[in-house]
Length: 67
Image 1 (cartoon, one colour):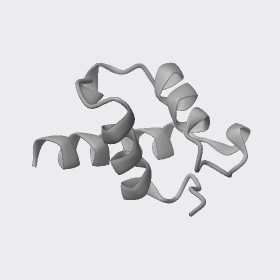
Image 2 (cartoon, helix red, strand yellow):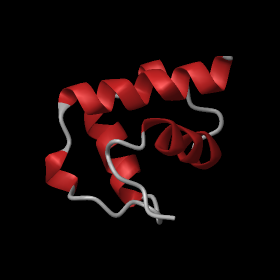
Image 3 (cartoon, helix red, strand yellow):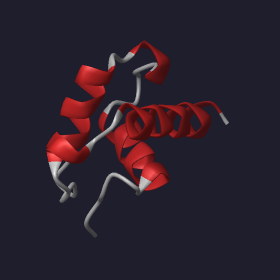
Image 4 (spheres, one colour):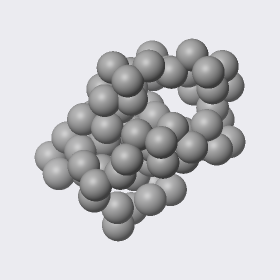
């Protein structure tokens, strides 16, 4: 399954698996961008990320990890 920037919750789930001990709210957007684009399933244009998309992914990751 390919992941794209709009796959907020799917990316969050992948980040939980790849970085299980990480507090999502402590991850700078530059690092978050790097980790997302390094996911094996990620198949979108790395340059099409926006701050809003990164923030949505970070919040979904936080919600999934704590909820």
